[in-house]
Amino acid sequence: MRFMVIVKADKNSEAGVMPSEKLLAEMGKYNEELAKAGVMLAGEGLHPSSKGARVRFSGDKRTVIDGPFAETKELIAGFWMFQVKSKEEAIEWVKRCPNPHEGESEIEIRQVFEADDFGAEFTPELREQEERIRAQVASGSGR
Image (cartoon, rainbow, N blue to C red; front, side, top):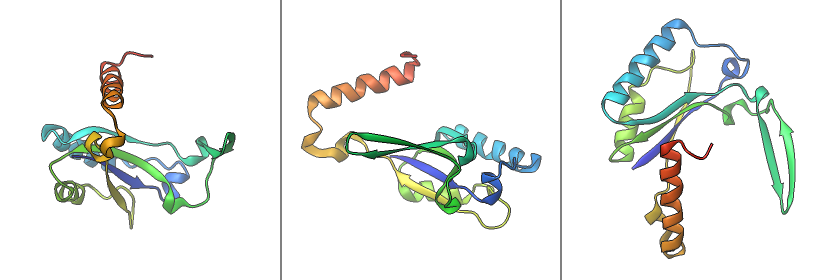
């Protein structure tokens, strides 16, 4: 099972305040543990929303909205992709994570859809296309 582990933003991460050397070292150690256990598929921190954009869809119309975005508690400061056996295992790994912000922080855990989750609508042709795309992404080709 794959899970996206989402580190929520706070006012400091949105202001572009960089983590302390101590936190960077603690996170590095944590990431090493995840990698050694074969849990971590990916993990990155994100720039503040002031450097981002959103694209709003309304039928065929597309509207670009530049950051920053108002609701800090709804924003993402970073993420991991975990490969684990269960949601409970993902929770146990997240509980071992250093606090990503001073004071209170929140990390959200969301399961990633797998091919079998989509049922009959995900035809053999669509499954084959998905496998080709995954192989292309994994090989780094296409760019």
